[in-house]
Length: 304
Picture 1: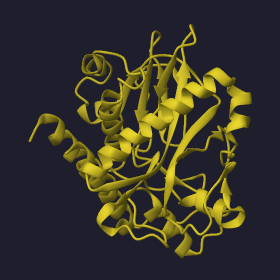
Picture 2 (picture 1 turned 135 degrees about the vertical axis):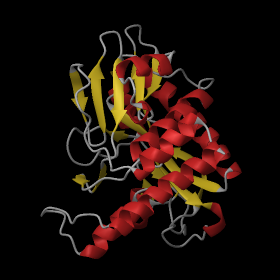
Picture 3 (picture 1 turned 90 degrees about the vertical axis):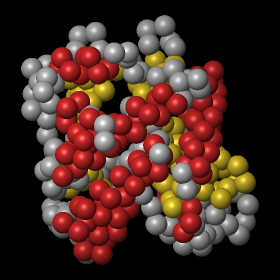
Picture 4 (picture 1 turned 180 degrees about the vertical axis):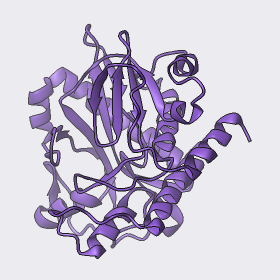
């Protein structure tokens, strides 16, 4: 077992890290899952073990989730570098060792990245009919302006992957937009660039998932630009938090599929009778461990 594997095993068996003690750096931002700190010439992104559903952060968190997501993202940033440049800076281990001396469990969940200006849209690619894409098709026969064949079932594979961007809302749900609306927001040249990159990234992720016995049903990408207007892949990439992965050996169109993401948590909340207005129920140990196992299994499958 490598040192990194030992550290990850210890992180999985330790209490969830739901907040990051200030490492003595200016805080640049805080999201539902990540904490961002300013390094002057770069940013430090730390993925906590927080988990959200229906736009609410739940308690007590999923131990090791942030480390799993970070290690998967680092793998994918390396694998997709020939498709598009990304925000990861060199000498990651050295810089993280300086920031978190003696804290390998924090280094596992951290990335040092280039400062960029995020685009104001999120780039979703769907290869299968699921989630909000299925709901839209069921009601209208189309999804985000894409007219689809009649008679498709939930979880059916689409004739070809489709690009279905959304707005990027600071609060609440992101709003689906059509390709033409996205082009108006970004400009036609930039739109063509992010659409092409998104579809190539999806195909690469889908092929890798297939080799690992999984189906990549859909996924979300985020991009940013530097001062010269160059485009970069940012945030996270092809993780169970930003993607819908299904076990290939259980694939059965016509119904909701078992998945390697937080759908297990959503199902628990729905079955609990929570009204989505009052404080959410505390996640029981069974749901915590079951969710952790799903994230870990996806990572093991993809990383080999």
